[in-house]
Length: 263
Image 1 (cartoon, rainbow, N blue to C red):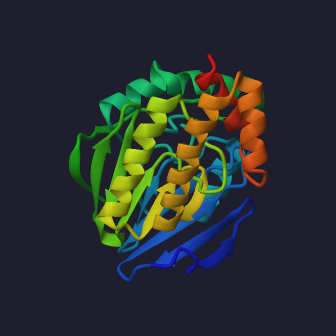
Image 2 (image 1 turned 120 degrees about the vertical axis):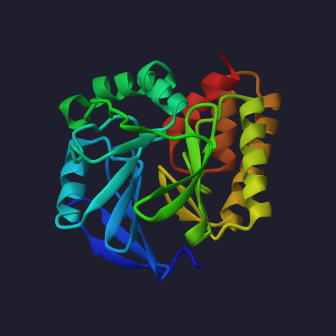
Image 3 (image 1 turned 45 degrees about the vertical axis):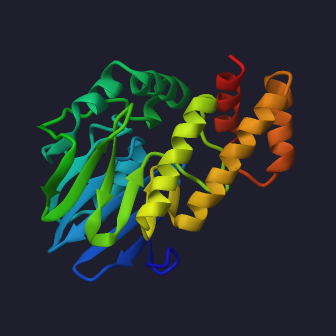
């Protein structure tokens, strides 16, 4: 599947890119919210499954309008645990560690930061998990997902479309990298995707990507580690990264990465 083969539907906010796999359709929504969140909807036999809910009130309203008349079988909540006002009554699926990340871990810290930064525009309400899932296969809305637990939450394999979902990739934008060990972990993960031969890589903050993008990110992460070793402090590190990657977006993520490498 070519990542550029989709039809476009413009919403009140952002636009939906629809990939047709035959029995299954992937609706990839560029929300256009302040965090550039991407929300994915899987459709099969007239039912929808939401992959990672939006967290901003305007996004929740736009998605609710888009889904009018479309049955929603469930919402998979991994890394984005806020936005609980979305479609009350629809089952919420998550793992125990993802729920803990949202309520007590790093996810909760981020939710507090975003609530402070964006005020009422950000829905800080936490999703209540109705169905706890574990490592391995689960069927929701007639679609088979394979749960892969991560340190913070979980990733997903979607065999019917030969795709994988993870939190972040972004081949031409900065990511939050919590030091060299974390970079090595991401590299190993991306190399695994290349070896598996996925058609699409879905992430919460970027449009669907492919294996060429995964290799581009691996090269970036290796370079990031080298720059950190040769930099005297975080400001020198940031300046050199921006010099070498002048067109990259996500400078706020680079700030966070610098803080981790030079804490």
